[in-house]
Image 1 (cartoon, rainbow, N blue to C red):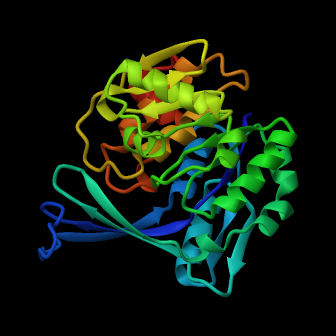
Image 2 (image 1 turned 135 degrees about the horizontal axis):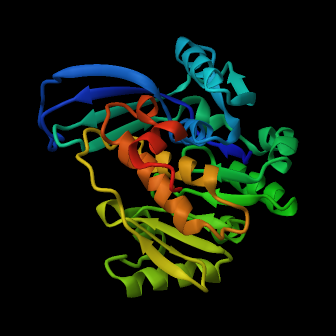
Length: 307
């Protein structure tokens, strides 16, 4: 069984269902309001766990009802929460999601306790990291903590996976300890300054990351699929076209599910990407992030057991 540590955010999501994303100064009526477990880190952890991995989580919540709800939810998934801190000095992270009738969203995030994850907490979690096959991180927890975690991982032969979302600058120090980077097309362009609108530019992007020490570049391209390149081989794995109801959590589902089935030498990268996209395609056909993430059994039920 693949062992994965996830360093990341834990948020309570509130979704506001609206006709369209509001323009500046515009007031809209909300047709429906719903709450669910979320946070990029938590979503990725649940996705990996439901696809058969053994997942440990490194993060933080507040001593509030939202934190208790999130911990209970993740515990019920079978995720190891021994490295999740309960903070007295911050509330549990929260996200407000504006979801339009086409399934597109805009998201506002209050980091809360997620912003309190620091290098000392990472050092306390070092044994958890060392005993993993992969560690996954995003940008909803402080970057210094991610660098510390990735350094521990690299020193112990653990593969590091960076999902640089939300979009932000990425330091050379962090890239130097990143094995796999997995931005979407917007995040990729924000980091490198290269628009990924054709294969030539995708290869230039991969070369940029390789020059910084990254072994494998994955760029998620929405309906176009996922581009990958490790310097020796590259390709575009097509997406599975479905009618999206809610795209919240699609990228997180992909990252977690792909990582759960990826072998350490990355030789099955095509198959792992395809599996991740299958899982993601199921997520977007349902409302809510975490509640919509499929199990491995569900993916096989919908698409068969080829992968």
